[in-house]
Length: 158
Ligand SMILES: [Zn+2]
Image 1 (cartoon, protein in one colour):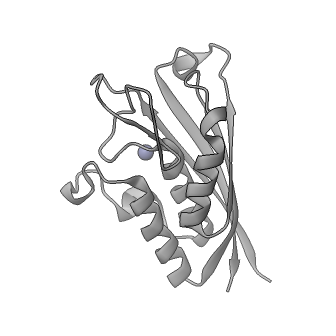
Image 2 (tube, rainbow, N blue to C red):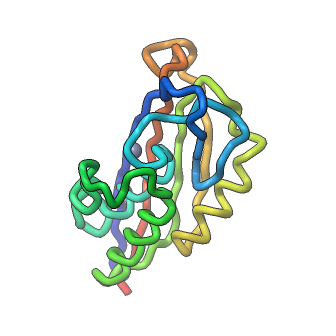
């Protein structure tokens, strides 16, 4: 069996627009503001997509979905992730599992983790785990300016 691993990273700052919705791991949280970005700025879903693309040797999210392409303005990132899973599958790879480490000061992810894991797992077609970590006040994320996420994905050759 041939297996490969991929690493994804993403970071988004909080939006200046107080009405911007907050979408994390494919779940809209009842909190504002959301993160700034061209799509819905779902930092977890973007990191997962990059990890899968990396594992399959297919470049990164920006290669496939340029952020100056109006098609993706305000797009649901889970739709992007579904496209990525199609690309990975078409290249002969099957996702085995994904693990995410989200670094943020607020909000608390614990109440939403199960829904995120379920939503992402459904889109990826494999187990996705989401873990949250605080930055202990250090750096931009520690000052609550944004959210960062790392993800690793394992795929096997079909
Ligand atoms: Zn992103």
